[in-house]
Amino acid sequence: MKRTLIVGNWKMNLDTSQASLLVHRLEERIKIHQDIEVVLAPSLLTLQPLSLQIDRRKFRLAAQNAYLKDEGAFTGEVSFTMLRDLVHYVIVGHSERRLYFHEDLDMVRDKVAAAIRNEITPILCVGETQVERRAGETKQVLHDQIMSALSNLTDQEVSEVVIAYEPVWAISTFSGILAKPDEVKQALVFIRKQVEDLYGSRAAKKIRVLYGGSVDDQIVGGYLEIEGCDGVLVGGASLNYHKFSGIVEKAYAVKHAPEKESDGEDS
Ligand code: 13P
Image 1 (cartoon, helix red, strand yellow):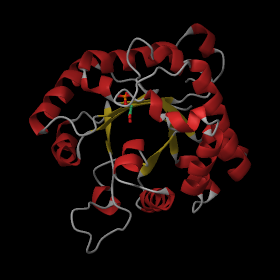
Image 2: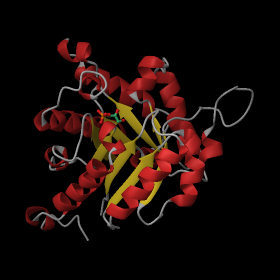
Image 3: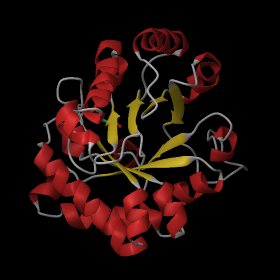
Image 4: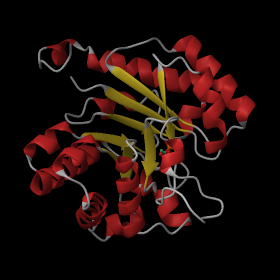
């Protein structure tokens, strides 16, 4: 059974006490669901106190970034090695890191490898910009980002990676245009096909592929109902406890909708 993955990326928002309050509010609302995995990605500074606060049956933690070397003279950085006891996941290659911090394909590849080396699951973000989409380059961009990011991994390691399709134009703080479920479906199918072509059908079946971009509690169902969509990566709406707990509830409802129960995926 694949668990639906709901990831809240808080980005550079919420100080330690605000983060603690949000977790408290979420804990009141979110129930334990065996088949839904809820992951919180707070700021680096907040990970340690939240790791002591969270109910681990309800939440797992993710870092939003880490450095590709395990230790050494890299002032200001935090390594995957330092995070390994604290988090299950690290977001790698988010478009904001690619655009604002100039993370290129090689850096993203090395970060994915560093995550795997340190037994942390990378959530690899891929997605085209508006300009690339208009130029008809979406598939090429996704192909290049996936090919290069996974290139140092074995088939087994690839199957453990999570890929999040986040078209830059759909992110709320960029243009926030809502991607149609049909457009998302095409991209998710393409991403899984890339994995299949490169690493075989076992890895393609096992790998989890998420969608991210202006997802909230009102529209999340349309994305989660897409066949092969294993969850969502949520930015803005994850800062609002009504919206984020609503997303988790909706994920549960979609998972347990009558027509889905017959596909044998649920326990
Ligand atoms: P929004 O949900 O605010 O569009 O952000 C998406 C995102 O970048 C999550 O990583």
